[in-house]
Picture (spheres, helix red, strand yellow):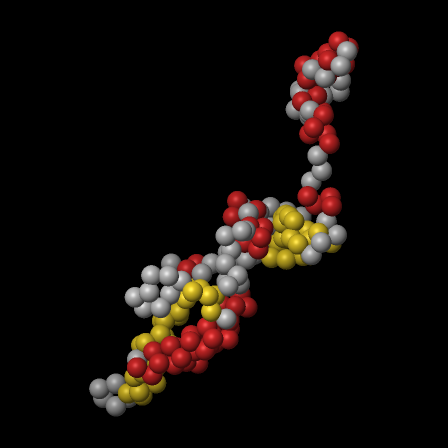
Length: 189
Ligand code: SF4
């Protein structure tokens, strides 16, 4: 690099001689920064979605490349969030791509010290057996005056904030049909 090039690569020189007199844009940009492209630029397609984290329901644009989520941004067309996402919503790509995300069922039997993997049908059967057993053991058919109760005190549901409206609707229907009366969501606590 000659002396002239070196001087021109100096941000202060570019600030004093170029259009970016405040030094907040092109004058302060390095050659490497200029060569970088956002992950959104290489996406094959963009899918409209809704942030799963809370009931605000900010709209998202999910950028997909080679069938993998490469970036999630706020959707400027949303009248709710107008392109904005809070820090949690901005990090929601990790929810689908994080390496710590478990994608196998793990089971630790009573008194066992190790987890072991279960196939999903086996795990679902075990959950169903326990739900039915707890429901039966906690069932109250009548109160002490003979008035009908038809409820179970053996089950409760506590939903997390990442559940969406549709999931909460189905969970409420399921647990009410099972006779549970303690049905709550983290968002109301
Ligand atoms: S971006 Fe933040 S405020 Fe918006 S829905 Fe997600 S968690 Fe809620």
